[in-house]
Length: 43
Image (cartoon, rainbow, N blue to C red; front, side, top):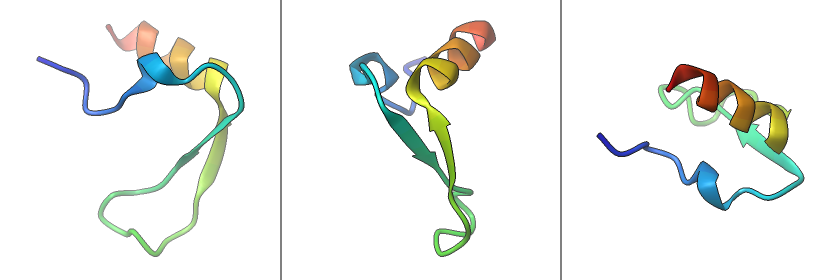
């Protein structure tokens, strides 16, 4: 199963994350490294 996000291409900076069921809702900004570590931990 392929990941739904292209985190392999995130080198630095911040990644905005939003609830897909509420596209107009608030955004949480997560550091790219922290998000990558989280995703790696799920694998």
